[in-house]
Length: 610
Image 1: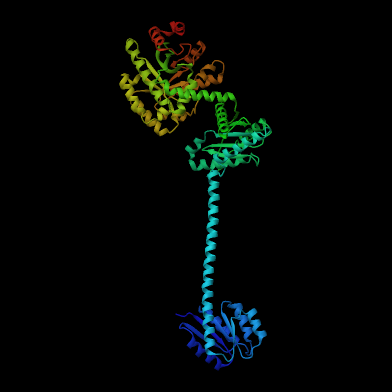
Image 2: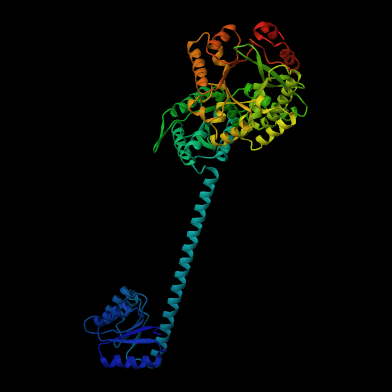
């Protein structure tokens, strides 16, 4: 294996041959000895060896030669092949040339002619060892440099990863906005600033997109994510550089308005945000509209932590949603007290069943043609042990939100079925009465509902044909295929189905034929104004006409005057309920009502006074 080459340059052939012979004796095997009689020939030889991949370890060059002098050759070699060691042979030592070679050609050593072979051998072997050591040192240096570069790259990558992790820990992956962690930190800083400077003011806005679930369910989460990003950008453009907007989670955003002048400025920003959302969002082939409900909580030195401010803004946001969405609301102490009240109701709800605090009232449903009683609607009431009567509107929404509506709804169903079974047995001469029971959306979605329904019918001994379950329009349109299967199971038990408060929900006429509905119940809001508002009268007429055209009965809710009754009769509305006939009755009074209700047109006043 070739270790490398040694090049000898001298214009005297005999000197070259002598050098070659001596070097052959001096050197270990593996070295190639190359000869050149001039500097030009030596440079060509170097180029050829370089092309062949052979390194020249040592150059031995005569000082005085025709053409290029020895020093000139050494300097040229130094420029092109700086790692090659160089020895100068000189007969008449010109120290200026030697110094020049030392300074500019990195001369390793010079040897006088004639040379001593032993001295030459020692010099050559020492030079080659020096070359090998230099190569090893250079290789080690390169390795160390590479290791240093790798280390620096690893440190840079680690710092980059740490920076990315720190960013990811404080920012939302989808919108790249700050997340709730960073927002909470900034709000806490604002609170501390207000403690130090009483004149410093700030506000927190809590934003919830209205009906965003419809986008995800209808167009998929990919489109929903695009819309969220577009909304985030639009909201951000409405803010100052020192404000902070964060994605709080899902379709919720929160904003810290830093260093505001007063409360009015926060309200102006909220309105600006709502206005910005009014323009449509063009996302590829989809054009979408968005609205939001915004809650505002103005910070002060009275606040101690960010969680309280976010809670207050969240409460205000729910207040805005209750006003009809697409608006903002400012937090007040009344909202906080109301929230505490709702929490107490939620806590008491779970014990109310055990304490038997719920009772059922029954509102009569009559035939508008014959004025005869045909059934009742079961209405749950809560008689709290210490707080007294709690209106359904104060606890039913909470029960639905918490899922308590499922056990409560089954209790109502069982209680109503037991009562109807008892009445039908007590008055066998009457046509069997019916019982209408309201279902909540979560009950319909409960996979155990049909099983529980069967158990109630079996335990109460009630025939399913006298039971009518009331649904809302929105329940029908949520997961239609699953709802259709559940409704088919209900109908297979001869149970009737009714749509409650028809006209106040989606009111999509096209969906009605798809569902096995027996009855439409016209919402009381239309009945109440039908005698003074022609438009409401036409709505009632349209609903009745629609129902009759597809073989569905109509029940009008909230009938309170004879004029309303007569109008409904002219529209051929089959059934009705309302204070004209009776308010909701407790079981004992309802039973008296059944006994007296032979002809309601004769004894309506008496029934009303029960």
